[in-house]
Image (tube, rainbow, N blue to C red; front, side):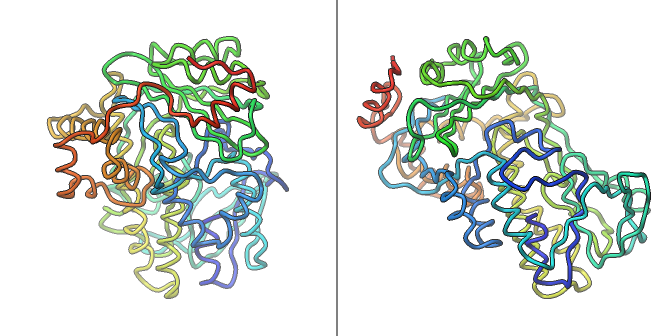
Length: 447
């Protein structure tokens, strides 16, 4: 949908090739298993979507989504300690169910008469040759194949992309690919919250990489519900057993998630996912790239979903495509767009892989000396951030994809990291007095 939004003002018509039927409302969509897990939209992605489709954030909030200021409205235990809830927020995230986010975006895109959906249809090949893609070959649900000519083909098919194979079939070879598999798995379910979720903080209990254990998150979403996800490495993975879900949560570094769920009502079963591979295709490095073809989103790079980067990187890539396509579908557009799309991918890739490399179960590459030194520096920054607004702000800028990682080596940030936290650490969950009263009123005990 964001790819359609990116190009619709530069062409006469847009065809979206969709293998399934699109729902009419904020309902589950076939082919999006990730929707069962927490799906916050980082401010870097939210701002990009707002630029593509003005009014989206307002529509999401009006439909019940929460705009969560960071770290002002977060109860956050990092490996180094509890983050303070600074009164001045820097960035934000949109807390909503994936189905609602999809619906709000989809309605705005499909309200444009230039955009049409061809449902129950799959792309099964590219038309053209190594120098130019001229369309796609389609297969309908009854097996009938047809050809669809196009001035521009955008691959937004996600992790299941076949573009590498199709490119090879056209004679475009030499594509480099990376795969980094941490072995992490996660389990999620939705609860009826015991308190109203409007303005409620996001809760994050991160793992400490120096000791075995998992992590957990509670994200307040529309309908006074909590979306809860638990994460763990091999040997400590959560399961699909509903009776074991809260037991696993109680075994985290702090039992806060389990304590909050004690008075919450489960509304769904437990969904488990073990597909957390970081995988990237380096299209921008190919010597030859055909005109008329652009790959976007997970088709280019799919990240370990626990970092919540996928939607935001896709949105930033779509925005880059729109800015370039505004000048028309000229020669060289596809290569320029592919290189522009790679830039936000670079940032998210360095963040995700920079974390996953240090799990002992990771396959694909082991950390080198530079990786280990960088990891130690980021740990120092995280430690400093628990008592330094300057460093907390810098980290938030990078983690929400609003600034490049080079922000973390500015002289003022380096000096702050050397000096360490300016304020003493807090000794427990950082709920406000009002939030504690609301929890006590709902019978939620906190240790």
